[in-house]
Structure formats: structure tokens, C-alpha cells
Length: 177
Image (tube, one colour):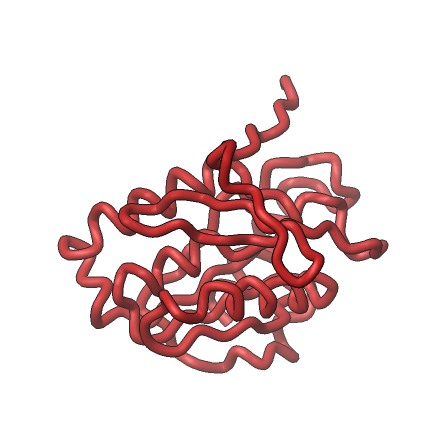
């Protein structure tokens, strides 16, 4: 079985800018430029993937925005799991979703909050960041119902120490919790 690392999403070359001493990258989604700080936390909980926008996430963000009317995004509450820097969930808000939760491991939540704040003037509805650790979904603060669960490149690495079947089980429990 060949292991392939997901492709990183491309940013607009000229749109990297510095704001409050942090470098934000711009990702075009529809008529918008989503500004993201892609920070990889120094934490044993994270494997370095959460601070990167992967091509699958950029593709899903474009799909959601391009099909927002067909998907009825203006009346869909969304949770994005494994949000990383939050591109997909922010795109869901830009698409009209009245409520979006961006979720990931605890060390990634501060970066999600910064990215929500950075894009707040463009967002519709309520957008929040929350911790969701698939290994302990029983204690999840996300005991609410959602109409749509989004995620991109969630299970790309079978060498994460738990094996693919355990990760699929944890993912299913997180979604169904």
C-alpha cells in the first residue's frame, strides 16, 4: 500500500500579508479571500497537519460555496471536524450557514479562534471554535445537533499509532456522538 501525503492548497502568491505581527495566507473562495494564519502548534497531541490547508480542504470549500443554493446552506447548521485552520467551516459560513462550529484538538483551537476573528467581517451567522478529540467524544462539549458534518483529509495517515480501523471507529463515534 502506497502512502501519499495530501497536497497542500495553493494560496494567492501576492496575498501573503502581515497583520498584528502574524502572517496570514489568503485562500480564494468564490468572491471572498479567506485569510488564515496557518500555525502548527508545538504539541505532542498534534502531528503537524492541523496548521496546513490541504488541497482537499480547498476543493471542498470551493464546492460548498459554489453549490450553496443547491445545498441550502442558508438553513444548515454545520460542524466541521478536524478543522485544522478552519477553511472549510469558514467557507460554510460565507455560504450562508446560520451556525458553524470549527472543531479540532485543543492545541489547534486558539488558531481557529484567530482565523474566525480575522474573517469576522465576512462571516454570516454564528461561528465558534471548539475542542473535539475523537478519542474522548463522551466528554465532548458539542452535544448539539447539526444538519451537516464536514471534514476533509481526516484519515490520510495509517501510521498514526492506532491503525486505520481504530481511527475509522473513533471518527464514526465523533460524528454520531
